[in-house]
Length: 579
Image 1 (tube, helix red, strand yellow):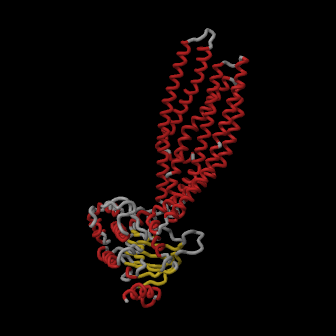
Image 2 (image 1 turned 120 degrees about the horizontal axis):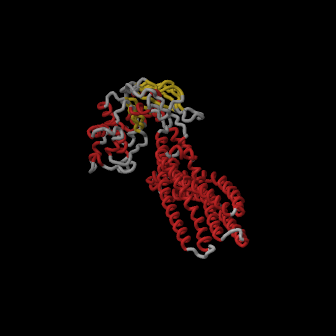
């Protein structure tokens, strides 16, 4: 955790440095108060000449000044500590977010989304509390212990020996509690991840849940995950809670011992009443300091699991590195070539998702890809913008290996309309401008017309200023697909990939979209993955895939004459329907 603090405090270092200094000064003033109280009792009240009000007033005013100074220093250190801790968490959360933004699909596959959300919310809260404990308690408590212990031994060295016995006992107990608690909290955070995953799945799929009347099933599933969190939390915190009674036991034992031996010293004349009262104050200060150390260390134990989880993200090796050396290198055109490409998702996978792929696409061609479910059609096109990297072979775009480009330059030249259409909160125009934030309204309209979206957009009362809501809940599936196509077109890419992106629109609209792509966007390479033959039958070439391999390539007429799989699909989808 200390490494994270040093690395991500950054511009808040001054607050993180000044706050402990103020805490130390606060302790010095607090430690001075009991010593001044000794003067009041021994000289002002029990002095040789009786009660001396001048000494009482002078010492009393000193106590008031010390208290007021300690209060101001404590308030200032608290404000600075809050600034430093919130700044630290802001920097760390931003670093995590930037790292996640650079994750490849493979990295995202490793971390579940609910887990990442938990790491950036609950884990960050735990880290902030631990950071506050470090700045305030772990500075205050040791300094308070040292200064109070010095005062204790100054007053009576023999009574001070009591602490030499108590401190090792407390240290051993604290170590044992922390040693067994840390693994429990790691398990607890994983259970939180699973509970959040259940929540996200339910909220995202709430319409499906209600359609299939599965509310009771989902309630039971969440109840089970919530119960699992509760049990683990009870186990972990029950162990940590032992810290309080243990410290209380040692504290009261010390107080009893000090009272017994101190009383004997007073009777024997080896200690004054004022010294004894001050000694009790320092005793409370020492024990309170030990309690603060315990609390701070417990807070750090809570946060250690969060530290580990944050480091897992920060230290995750991104498998797709931006190694492009020439910032000016951009694809010259939309040509694509797969050379002996093989790919598998993990190095230890037994089977290749793609095997020995050789495919050439000329710039400006419209290419259709068809095949059964699981034939790796989507995997193939995801290699173009380097969402994944090839395992063997090479992929060329615009005449260069995709690994030679800077990722930004490559991905600006390739637009993808994914199977799962995603829109964001905001207006229709704001969503479309994801393709080009500097696009004019006229360019937005032109892209919408090409995607056959303009008519339904203008049918809304607010037109392009219609608020879509989170995830585009205000539009149908087909409308959402057309908006995503318009967004991709507005990017003006060299290559556009449409991954089954017209499945929710009728065949007539599908045909209009393809016609518009040919007529208005000549020169743009278009790759269409489809389940419907009608969506690709007029393509320049059609790629038939089966089990991760290219089974055949040709035009519609060529494939009808020689490929039985394609012929059977056509008979099933089109000829059978017409009859």
